[in-house]
Image (cartoon, rainbow, N blue to C red; front, side, top):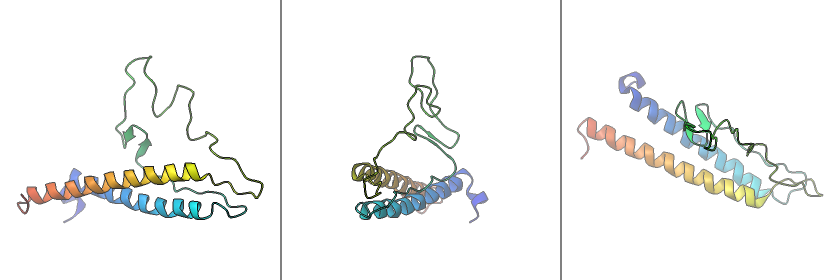
Length: 136
């Protein structure tokens, strides 16, 4: 069945598959960072998220709205915090810049995000089976 025949459900399923592939690739890179935590001169790497993700609180064109000046901003971050530019590690005298605590936090978050995408994908397949009369 073509994606156009599936409509929005097909687009969602493709987006979830892309997301799961991203998290699989990211897990490999993060594992390499941890494995090289003692390698002289090693710099940690990360994988860029696929297009369509706007960051914390938003996916695609959907994001949280700031309805009051007293609310904390998310996304554009007008509150002065910029977690992307925060210095999270120091370089050791051997030139290694891997911080195991940061890497393990990334691994845990990546695992959680993958499980969420896999669960949504599974539920979506179940709904499609119900819609075509093959499920309960």
